[in-house]
Image 1: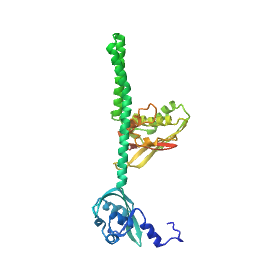
Image 2: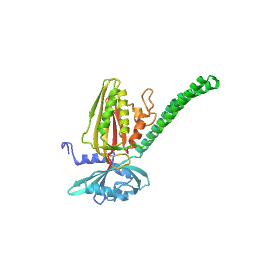
Image 3: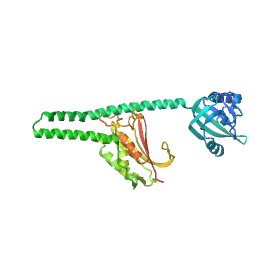
Image 4: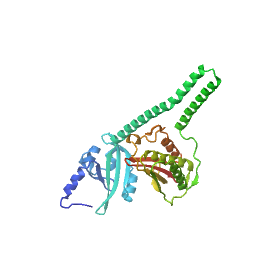
Length: 357
């Protein structure tokens, strides 16, 4: 511990403790409260006299904080515990959601548990509002994109149909009919692309680096700019159970997007690693193959990042905005996950493909 002894005193330590914005509580091994700071008193709605010596359960009318887990992991094993959304009802009937962290502390051969509690209701509401706004914006972009994509073929169909009304020459009528069929096929193709891939992946065990080498070769053929492709493969990665062609399609799409973004040249890196504690939302941690595609381009527009995988989201002139949406569907069919992180001068896509048990 780093302490400047010239300025340090127990009084200063207590001032720091009491002025923490996070609610801090110290509990003994029987989960009785022996110390709490001002923020804890304000959060619980109880004064110091009503707090000290109370059993933790008696501080609430109801709570979903997992004390059994905390007792086992924090108190017995000495491992920090975190519960991001715990529902609580305080003694004064207020309802709240808390983020809770616990850590074991040892003093004079006695173990204690330090509780840190932070109310997250405002953060959750902000996230919900933000998500609703992003969904609304994505829906608007989808509708506008659809209107644009549908309008052109419909205009062609209508013009050809009008010609058919007045055209007596059979050859001209045949040409109009061909135009109608062609534009109708465009509409059907658009609908098929919007619905996404409907064919289940044909999985088999294979070497992921062979798949990525195919991507590199295809990308090199399209490389008309001064763009360097760098490979950083982990040779210890075992064969993976995937649909090689679909994974190739996903990575190739991302690499080509990077190539188009690097208008003045640059570098694209394809990297493979094993991620031993991959956490997919809503699922238990699992060992997964990690494929990273990174470039040093201008980065993705901040307004697009949160809706990047939505249909019709694009910043490319003439782009359909369906490439990354389809990529996400293909990876999801492998029970995998794809994410993106970007800032000026750097963009990276992380593709997680879990290994089979």
